[in-house]
Length: 423
Image 1 (cartoon, helix red, strand yellow):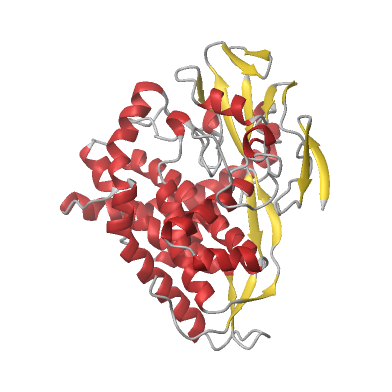
Image 2 (cartoon, rainbow, N blue to C red):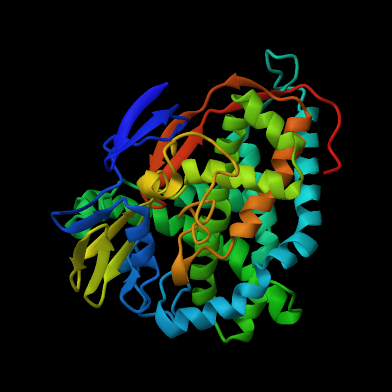
């Protein structure tokens, strides 16, 4: 049992969080540092995210992306009425009912096919008596296989697309709060080399072939919609990189993190397996609240914004950079209760507080793929747990600057079971 203090509230209970970045603050506070506001208070962070028209996107190096050649502003980087219109039009692909009815069968097929391949891989036998499986590889192939169906990137191989996305993320470190991202000229040159190559390959191998196919025969997917809206090939490429980042790479990390918690907590695993579909989603929401994949959301203040911080008022000035610290906000005891660092599915929350906290953002830029990410995670994990996995190698935690979040690498499990669930 541990006792700590967060914003003056005594917190008793275990700290179940695995992903703790060096330098993370221990309190959910609001403070102004040189060049940036750092906001770890859940109510204040949510107020900033819900302040329509006052801030613009500053994360994902959006302020350094050249937009002169783009006919349409990318949905991740747009704001205001334009963003609202874009979200309204693509919302039909990510609505919970559509996700469940249209994409769940695809998730089931992908999960069972990939797990069967892992079971048949006789060349990689684990010490637990089953087949050794590298979770990061399985989760990536699965997330790519599912999300590409929604986006429309189905005219190239899953492994090829996954490899190109991984290479795109092989970027030099940066600090969004520093001028020029804190990079040297050599680092910028390296970023160009490592970034442009995979993007060109992504266009030639994946995007161009998908666009050509859908110009001939449109489908019910994002690329077909973008073509109908008059997007150019370059516009569509940028959107595909966005969906590849948000819908494939981040889901991969959450799948691995959720599995890690379930395999090391017998009570949590038992509750998850005994629950119905809604109950299992509730468990996953609690895990991602504690372990948000995207740990920071960055916004640039366009109009002076005054926010309430308890009894105090903070004034965010025009041009200020705001770092919304999701990991701190999600364990703010003022909102999450006196034991925010534990895993407690179904914890009592006010009606306007989401069980996943700010892990999917809030306001106009709230992630539209939340239902998709949670359901595809549930589909794969229920089938993996049915195969009685045992940990062969614990994962190591790494950090990625582009998504401002964690990566789990080297996580290996043995699959000892011989049947797949019908859930």
